[in-house]
Length: 278
Image (cartoon, rainbow, N blue to C red; front, side, top):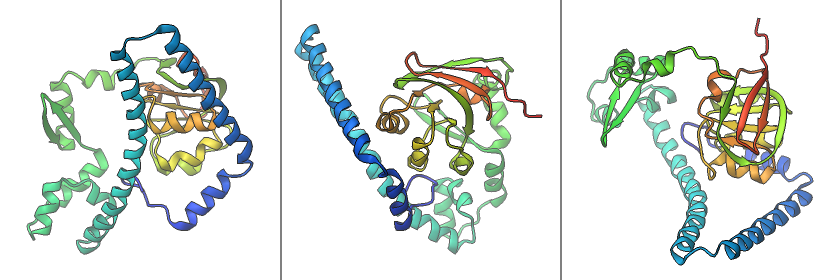
């Protein structure tokens, strides 16, 4: 289970596993060989550069962090599974939807459990218009939708989100090298997953476990968020498909149907031809 996602049941796990293990022997052998090759390349590079022990400690530390990050994601998924059972029961008792519960502040849930009234209109407004969490100098402030515009102007970021610039390319980190061209499929949430067509290039903010089945169908992955140890980076390397993470603005100018080029050797994604949405 992941945050705000529907937990997978046993049948879905079996179905997904069956789909992913088709002809997996060759892919598994290829991944093992690639891992051995990368490991040998690393040994040769270390031998050539002869970094001091301080640097080697940092390298070993980062290796461990990478492994621990994957382990911690598993624990987060487990925690979310238990949290989902709790939030489902709270929603049932107070006649609220799952989305309404997840748009509430902790303090509001506590008030509701104590029998105190809450303003459901504000909660519904958050669902429709969103809300803004401002973290400044270590302090957190949650702002309701009606004040979002004022807060963004106050912080000097309003123009950045509303100015109409013409972008033709975005740059990010190459997570899995490769080069390809294809039609873009822009997905801003897991609800759009069923619309994905095999052979398209997935463009999204970031991927989660729910996106995993798309990796066997996608020509490439482009994410605005994430780093080299993010879900998209790790899974794209497993499937051997080009992937760029941390592109920042790809979702801002790429539309579904656009013909795009993904150069994951250089970390560049660019539009070749806009799709006519008329």
